[in-house]
Structures are given as C-alpha cells and as structure tokens.
Length: 232
Ligand code: SF4
Image (tube, rainbow, N blue to C red; front, top):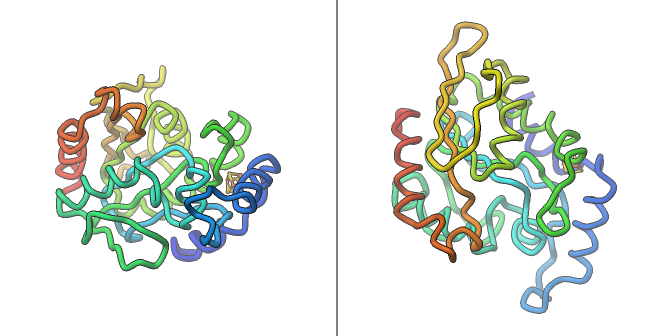
C-alpha cells in the first residue's frame, strides 16, 4: 500500500468509540456560523506530497475546524497561522486553507496528526493516542525514503511522535529527549539510512499565540530551520 491508499483507508477507522461519537455529534449539532456546512466528521488523513522531506506533526483535529472541512489544520485559527507561515516560506501555493479540495498545494512538506479524530476539549486520552499510533507509524514508514526533518507542534505531538518514529525504524535515545521550543534531536536510522532531525515547536494554538508564547517570527524561524535541514 502507498500513502494515497493509507490516506483513504484511515478515513474509515472507528476504533475509538468516544471519538467516533464526538466527531459525529459535533457534525449534527454544528456551530451557528457553520450551519450550512456538511461536516466531514471522519478521521483526517495527512495532507501534502507523499515524497515530502519535511513533516509537521500536530495534535488532533478541531471539532469545528478539520472535523468540518476534512483537511488537517483547515478552518481554525491555528491552521490560518500555520498555512500563512508555510506560504511565506514558499512551502504552500496559497496563504489560506479553506476546505478539502480547494486547490491548496504544499511543496515538500506534509502535515499529519498523531490522533486523527476530533476529541472533546482537544484532549485525547492516552489510550486513544496509543490506539491511533499505528496510523502515523505506518505513514512515517511510507515516508522513510524521503523524510529528513520533522517538527512536533507541541508537547503532545513530541510525546506521540517519538514512539511512532521508533516503530517506523529510527532509534530514539533513552531517556527520551524532552520537549521545548527549539528542542532538536537527531535520530539515527536503524538500517543505516539517513538520520532524521526532530524539532520541537510550541503549538500554533491561539492560547500560545495570543499570550505571546509563540510569535509569528518564532514560528517562521523554526520552520525555516527544519526546512533547511530537510534540504528545502
Ligand atoms: Fe481511528 Fe485514530 Fe480516529 Fe481512533 S483517533 S477512531 S484510531 S482514526
């Protein structure tokens, strides 16, 4: 199977009863501003080319963001900031991501989540995180020929991606490296292939950007560093 197949197959997953219920309940009740939307209400696949050298890892879809639009980081303030930054760096053909199928294309970068369904309060349980791990682990296995650099957006992404990268064939140091903005660790490939550069970046959530914890220049600088490490 290739990534295109994986992206399709994941949308049928119903392994987490609480998240299946939540993603579908929010699609029924909707938010007033989106009453005319037919919510996606399914797992969100990764987005971006299947031969990307750079991968960004988030947390989980937002109930009225990606769970509505069907594309990762699309339809919420976090995504608006992220896609604008990618556009500024020449990694996206447009600054705005509106909905699944709107013509937006990424260059050399893929975005994915360790949990593919919208959780209540944006908080998946550890059991849900672990249940979803095979999807992102398989995604990284399929990306292995090209991926050189990964950015974990937030501590949850960092904690979730390390075991997924380990399962996909990279060696993770013990004790596990700690998350922080600008944290950087090189993971050697167990088969002697090219290593992977992993970077930590504060999540692009309004909670971080409104408080000044993460500024637009900080985000751009981190993404630029990771893109350069990926050869972009
Ligand atoms: Fe399946 Fe992951 Fe969604 Fe759970 S969170 S139902 S494992 S896609």
